[in-house]
Length: 173
Image (tube, rainbow, N blue to C red; front, side, top):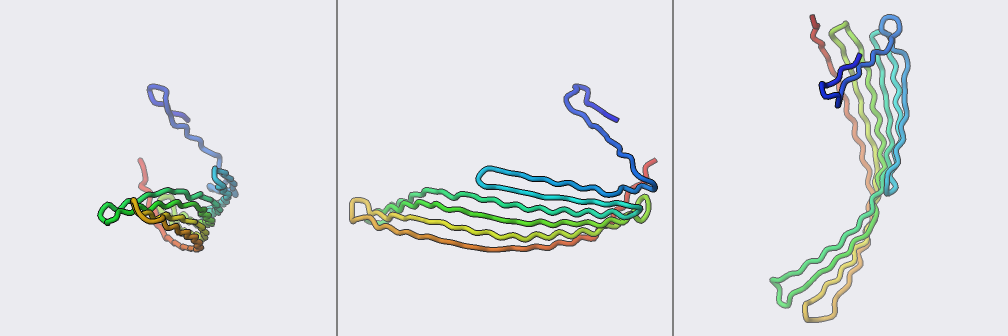
């Protein structure tokens, strides 16, 4: 069935798929991939199964992204005598990797009531390297001082969430 707005600009298309006996839905799945600028990638997949009152869904995703860091700053302290200017130039790279796993089990108690259990797990890591070059100058004074500050950091994270849900659907007339 289809329904459109009066101007014909947008609409709704409702596609009803044929189901097996007693509402069995069978097995389904899909995969996806993405590529972005600046060394960004993603891949994922999902799978679902339904039979009788049971439905099970799971999906997984992997994301890898890289971000270049660049910046220039200049600070001038007007309250000191003599005045000084600090110029900072930063350059570096940050790389993140993340895995996401999500799963849901639904049980249809009857036509109006269902229970769902969902689990969500994420794990990831990041590495970052940066180099800051500083020049400290005294206005009208001594030779500027130079500082070179390389930094490198690594980290990881993980998270788990669980949810138990009850759903009630109001019967329509």
